[in-house]
Length: 525
Image 1: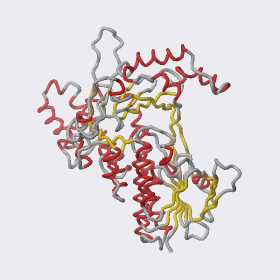
Image 2: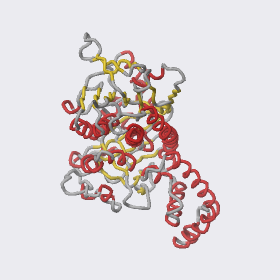
Image 3: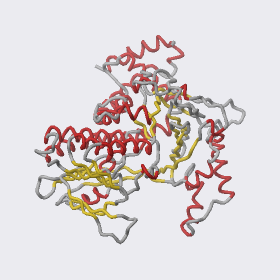
Image 4: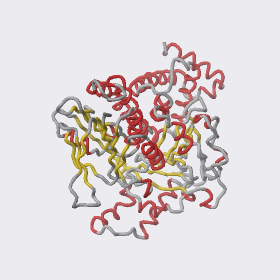
């Protein structure tokens, strides 16, 4: 008789896990608190667009879903497009955008994907797999870890008694505020912490060029900046994608505004639109409280309170001052700003990620955000979750066999040992990258540092790789990527100190690169 896995959560990680377990002959039950998106459209939590990179593709490739996702859901982004802050001098010439490639290899790209679209793709794949049962509108009420069973309620039928499901393995894919992890938190010696940024986020929208009635850059330029379409092994920028874009779709657009630590980003969608996300402080300068604080106070008294004309004008004036090139592309800016929620950004750490049942033969295990929620500034939350799923499957294969018989405890112990240090490393790197994105990417000193980094990588490709490349374009463990990134930072500091910021103009490009190689060589030995 096949082993039975109960997957709590039909989000990205849970749906992918269902396919993995089904391919290994398990009987799979997936319980999700939200309605079935196949019938009602995607109804999710966070809607920040996602950046699918090599690690996530590796996770998908384990069940042959990588190419389908790239063809159906993704747009390649081989670099950042920086939109500098407008000059305080009204007479100054406007500063144009600055493209910063992620890698010296033009084929290296992260991929913009819609959370909802990708979730639907994975749910369809799970539904098509043998032995998978998908149950929606069922909220996990509690988990009996000792007996490896969970109770669920249907909130649309409040009078019905809870449904109890027992399994050989409970897999928690139910997100940052996991009900399964909450049950683990009540157990002895379970470590848990959560920390919030002083910044929140809010989603805005840029329609397609056609909707705006302007000439767009067009889907035919998707392979711009060199070779990105080869990432999927196919031409994703073909004429069959007829949408046109108001901004270059082959870039992650960033409006860094420093100061209070504010920025806006925009990622392309397959329909020609962009999903924009504000990352602003909750309070202080350039903050959410500055523009919607009084409305939020009124809504605590009257949930239906509407923004005043003055408040609406204040939002428009703020964006015209700080994001002037974006305002003409955002016809619903003011409506979206007040209609869309302002949400928080949390980092979750816990240990251990699994607990054996009383009989020692069954267990509960955490994965994805349930185990390690991180902030989105390295674009690795989903990628780390997909990596979790494949690593767990491989640990189970080694310790128990595909059919699930054998040493489950050994498999889960190996999984935790392999993944926990790397989850902690990417959590730290994600917070560090927020500082880089909001405060540094627009500065000449940062761009100069990146030029030197790429020159060293060019000169010594077999000896050094930038941290970003290791994280986004390889499956090198996160902890090792962070260690190697710090080592390279120390080399960069020494090389910059030796050559000085005026060296490119003083030496000329070819000589400058030679001097960089000479300066870096002994530091890399």
